[in-house]
Length: 64
Image (cartoon, rainbow, N blue to C red; front, side):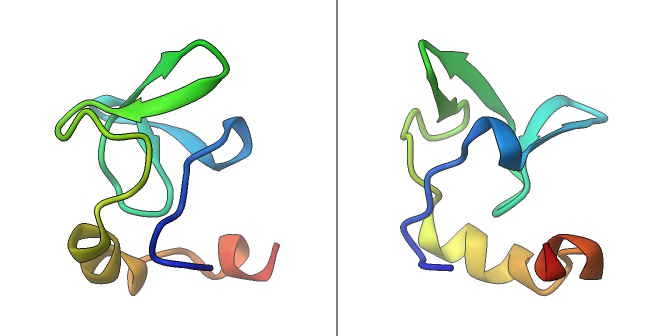
């Protein structure tokens, strides 16, 4: 996985706050066939948030 990851339909999960990116944990919203992070307005994950969130990814996701 690279730091400039773009969330896809396969990497979005339904969380407490709505749809979340599995890479960085931020909420996302659909924008056509892509997903935009609602906090930053960017399509790609913010590298700092992703790095801090990466260690909490589940083993099942890492293995898939």
